[in-house]
Length: 281
Length: 315
Image (cartoon, rainbow over all chains, first blue to last red):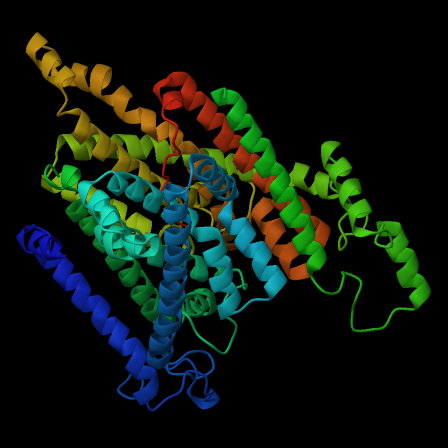
């Protein structure tokens, strides 16, 4: 971890990474605290205030049912970020288990496990997600289940590749000679050395999940009213864009800036953790 | 095992897997298309069930469905009476395919040329600008881009028709909205590849021979940089076909995506099943063909016994 820290400080990406991190952390804090402390609730309807433009009382304006858009956007941030983070963590958990077991198992088992991986990833994931959501019924939980069923293969492949690379190193042999158990080996020797690729994949998986949630909400298969997410809010306001632009602008702005930050962060981290690329780009 | 044989087996197995998943998931949904608010007399329900074969055990229905697929008969639509799923696909698919292929073509042309410009002008402001463009293209969801295009190009500037289907001009905006993300991916790929290739010895040799920069680019660097993009065509096709769900909804185009969305809202199970299987077949077939094409062009691939990590294109 020390070397990673030193890497970040020396790289030309230090400033952008810091800016992006500050933005993401403050968004995170807002997503947690604004719904708690806001005088408005995300679901209370005030029809006499409907579609009012931004003002001091409602800094982002209100929507077609008079709900405060600032509160809803931050509540939506909470939902969208939770979908992204939980789905990404589940992907990583399954990916680490599947990938490391495949890499450490005998060759026949490894081949079979990777073939299963290939077959599942050759199925168009969005269709399976839609099917699963039709079966489970739309909602927060089914989106997460559907995303983690369809999303772990990439992670498993990356982990397998890393484990295969690390397996041959001397320190692993040394740990084995000292009598390390397989789980301890995985936990305290393999994992710390794979942290780079894991973080990079995580930063790309989160925007992917947020995107899918927005996509599904746009089709009416996502988060259901009155709960808000960025996808739901954009979908609700896209038809009113010409008359009440603030209803579209704020959720769309936060969704895009978050996706942009995560994608950029992923790009920068990839260059940092991949010395071959990092030196020449 | 022979490379081609192995690929074909995986393809066939995946196809079968998709058909199984789709069929049993759809059958596991409680209720059926004929359950509605008003109670229907039992005799009518029974005859409906007998007509659609619901009274038989599940495995009989499954084999009947498999046999149907083999003869391109995907069954009748439950909601649109007298319409077969196959005939709806026959009407709608050419529309989606036209927009999809056009989007892929545009993504390839612009992605490759912008990628080349970015690589040649590496770290100059042109490069920075193109990279920012590509990250924005990846970060903007297609439905927002589509709405923005509609707003700016057809409402404000009235250059193109807003929506619907008819003349060629109707296809321009949907194509642009679909092409943006794959273009950004291709651009990034070409740029990274070219930068790597320019460091290799054969490029130095070409310089030493006194070839002009243009000749080196076109004859030596570009073909090697484009090769990996071919392997990426499969995921791009997947992106374009699934991306069309939303694009067709926004622009009101009577293609496959629009029909699928309508069927999902109508709970028209045979339609959803037929469409899912047709989509999956098209996608997996294109990935499979691209794999074969790629290994035929670049035989080194067959020796590497590993699957490449595609970054999954974003919806």
